[in-house]
Image (cartoon, rainbow, N blue to C red; front, side, top):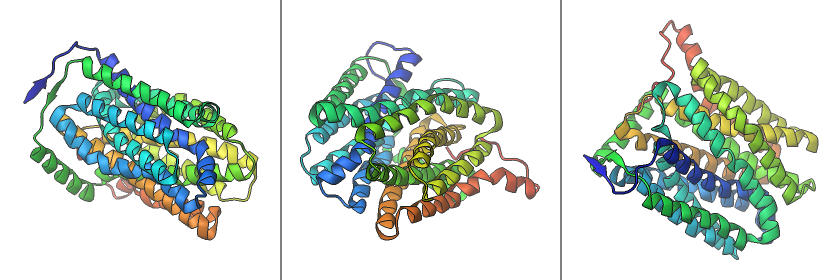
Length: 409
C-alpha cells in the first residue's frame, strides 16, 4: 500500500541533493584512506596482505548490508533508511577517528562499510526517481559528477586535514555533517512509496538472482561493477604504497587523488550522455580497453612520471565505469523492485573491491606488484569482456540487436 509520513513536502531537487550529499560523505571517508594507507601500515606494522584487508573491510561490510538495505527500503522507504544509514555512519566515523589500534581501526572501517551498503541503495533509489527513463544517462551523469566531488574531498581529508588537525578532529567534522544530514532527512519531506512486504521483497530477490544467472543483459552491469571493484581495490592498495616507497608524501598523494577527482567531474557527465547516444554496451567496450591498457602500464618498470598520469586516468576510469553500470542497471526497473536491483549493484562492487584489494596484496606479497596488475587486467577481460562485446556477437549470429537498457529489474 502507499505510505505517507508527515512532514514538509520537498522538491525533487532537494531530495536529489540530500541523496547525493549522503553518498558524497560516504565516499569522502572511503577515498580518505588512500593517502593514509602508508601511514597506518607503518604505524601498525601492517604487511601488504593486512593493508589489503584494511582496505577491504569497507566493501566487505557493504556487501553484507546491500540486500538488508534493499529490504529495509521496501519496508520503511528510502528516506528513513537513509536516516538510519547516516546515524550509523556518523558513529562509525567517530570511532575511526579515535581508533588506537589495528583491530579498532578495522572494526570502525567495517562499520562505515555497513552504513555504506544502506546509503548507496537508499540514495540511488531517490536519485533514479528524478527524470524520465530516456534521460537516465543525463541524470545519473550529473549525480556521479556531484558525487565525484568526494574524490576531491576524500584525498583532501586524508592528505591534508588529518595530518594537520589529527584524525579525531578531522573525522569528527565529517561525522557532524552526517548527523546533521540525518536530522534534516528525519524532519523534512513527505514520503509516498509502495510498502513491500519482506516476503515479497525476498521473492523478488530470488527471482532477480535467477535472472542474473540466466540473462546476459542482467549480468552485464553486475559484472561491470565487479570489474570496477577489482581494479580499484588493486590500484588503490598497491599504487599508494608504491608512491610512498618512491618518496611521495601523504599530502602529495592526496593532491594526486584530488586532481583525479577534478578530472572525473566533466568526464562522467560526458559518459552519461554517451551512454544515451550510443548505448552502454558500446561505451563499456571503450572503457574496458582503456582500463586494461592502464593496468598493464602499471605493471611495467616505468618510473614515477608514468605511474602518476596512469593512476590519474584510472581514478577517472573508475567513476566512468560506475556511471555506465548504473545506466545499464536502471534502464527498465519496476518501482517496487528497484531496491533489489541496487542491492545487487552494491554487492557486485563490494565483492569486486574486497577480492581486488586482498588478492592484489597477496599476489604482490608473493610475486610482486607487476604480477598483481597483470592478473587484474586478465580478470577485467574475463568479467567485462562478454558484456562489452555482446552486440558484436549478436550481429555475427544474425540476431536482432538487444535493447541497451534491458535488465531483469
